[in-house]
Image (cartoon, rainbow, N blue to C red):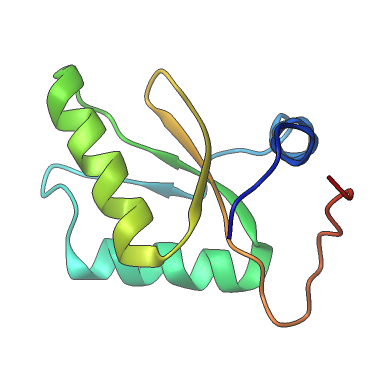
Amino acid sequence: MKLSNKQKQFLKGLAHALKPVVQLGANGLTEGVVAEINNALNYHELIKVKVPTDDREEKTLIMDAIVRETDSIKVQAIGHTLVLFRPSEERKIQLPKH
């Protein structure tokens, strides 16, 4: 699934008020963290994940791995925060047309 710029802007607006629901700890990206992100995506569809590392390359690799492992869409990454979207079967969030 590919999002248009209009759809991404819409999701960024929705995500603005959200607090991160998952924060990576010292152990990094573990199976438990991936499972937690999957659960949050199933429930909320749009979530923020905090990736607290100062190494830019490591942060990018972790964020890319999260997107790949959860089969979600990266809406935005600002600083240490990653905004993810994955529509559930209920489709709680109605995206605008292209």
